Amino acid sequence: MSSIRTITSSTTMPTDLAKKIGIGGVNEILDVFWKGYSELKSDPLCAISSSSEEDDITQKWYEKILRIWDSRNRATSITLNGLCPYHQYADNTMKKRKGSKAPTIDFCFKEWTTNSYFGAEAKNLYANRHDKIERYVSTGVDNYTKGRYGSQSSESSIIGYVLSGKISDIVYELKSEIAKQKPLSNLARTTSPNPQYKSRHLRSFDSQEITLHHLFFDFVSA
Image (cartoon, rainbow, N blue to C red):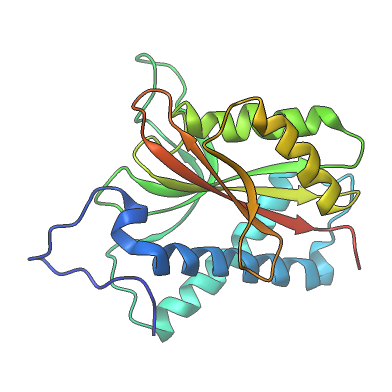
């Protein structure tokens, strides 16, 4: 049975998707993320190497996610109308001016009735590439804390594609870089058996506390 909450017409629900689906719903989405990664890594037709492009990995991962999500929806009673994965979703909520390009997040789960979504922004990470560590923060963490992505969401995620090196070393570097942003709490390991972390931040434009889920996909080890 799906852990996402059942919605009825008489129930008043928050517009924030994470609050609407609850902890169980968020964990269900994260579980699908991990299952998609597992399928992607074990698929000989989707070989990932240190030279793989970020967008190419995300496209292949999205295809796995979509299949898993459709399968789960058919087998369970997920009742959030229209909740489904979107690839390369253009977020118009914080677009600065008419005619400007809307910020585009790599991936998200969204329902059609609100602008709130559970986002996933993906970044390539490598050993001894501090520029990629900085980019993870400046175009990942910062895009959430400044409201470019998920401005109506209290929880979102960042996916680190680890293409060389060890996850533990990369997390150590990320902690130092994220600390410069003065988070409410820095990267902390969750109870998940997978390399999954959380950090908490204060969003700059509305002083809303947000939680970021950090998932690190290991494409180095066999």
